[in-house]
Image 1 (cartoon, one colour):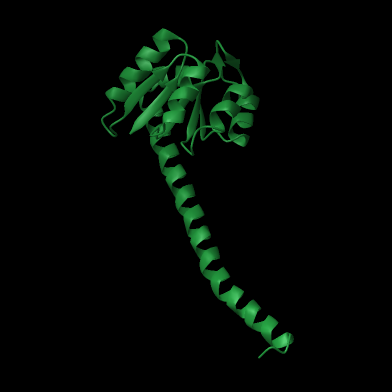
Image 2 (spheres, one colour; image 1 turned 90 degrees about the vertical axis):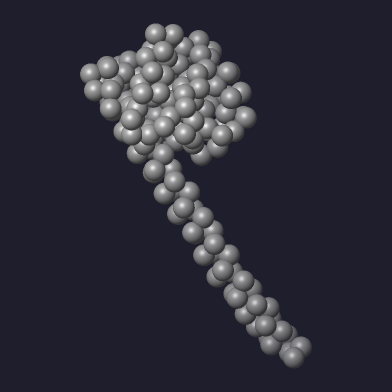
Length: 161
């Protein structure tokens, strides 16, 4: 699975990539972008399964960073990585579409946190896509006979038959 890491701090990017590469539970292929513009360009290419996003980048800050990525994510789940434990910010990111908010120090203390968060986010995204596909198919299947009934009713009320 391809994970796009949008992180401008070289040290953090390196140890996060190593964590992903050495995760024994899932096979992650990390790609790195150190600016928002580079991350958005990579997202435009497609094929990204999940996104790890630092909100404080040289070319974007805070919630605007999340919004820019969310709108171009192609449905890939976004996990916000932060240096700060900021509950109001964490809640806001979740309300705006992030799948999770992970504090980097928590990952340093317990490296499995990152892999688990990614795995759960990808599974939730698959569930959401499946639900949307099921709803779309169901609506289509219901609409077809209803259209026929409506047209036949129109014929009867217009006394054409």
